[in-house]
Length: 295
Image 1: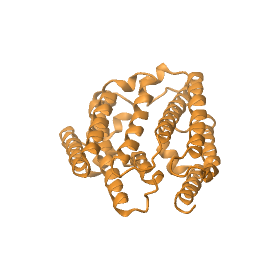
Image 2: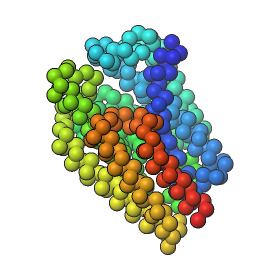
Image 3: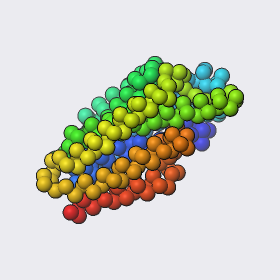
């Protein structure tokens, strides 16, 4: 039962909560131990609340999942995780995250509550509405970034980063839908019965998603370039612009994966498996840290 609970909590999805560290890194306080520990605690609390969201999402979808050829194997739908246990676990995780957030910083707890309620509404209704489904997911990433700014005394965090994170989240979200729809079209062309696809995909077409991706990918690169140029902390120092090629390559690599390799339905899986993308992100991170803490 414990293994079923952990699977339902989706620990692989916790990588999304690394966005909380954006304020710490880009405000130049990564090496400040108290701020680092507060952000690390906030990261842990967001992992708890996001896992609570996944549990309640599976509870809300349990009837539909039991009729689904693939999702019927999920722990709650298959009965490996009893519904009362799932309800109790989800409630305790949510309560623990809210109480922990309150002791850490009351405004941080408010962000956790807003995120929780927003994702519940998403699970109930909004995930079936095209475009709005991706916008809500992008809002979740922005809330993570904002939550990180509430845990430290922000001095040099640029508003450009909110714009950048929004566009990056939209890029990943539309890219995910594009990869899912591409697989659906490929299976239909092979004459096989498509399984495991979202209802919201009925509201998208590949040309439409390609247009969305073209717009947000270009805007993401431009926004990052503008941020490196207009950093508020070191006017006149343009060393961060040297990191732009890594961002460009990472975006192009992701586009290649979703449009040529037809993978990308789960961005966190790509992050954990694709070596060229990992290398680009690692080199970008090293370059950013060098600029912020050595230059």
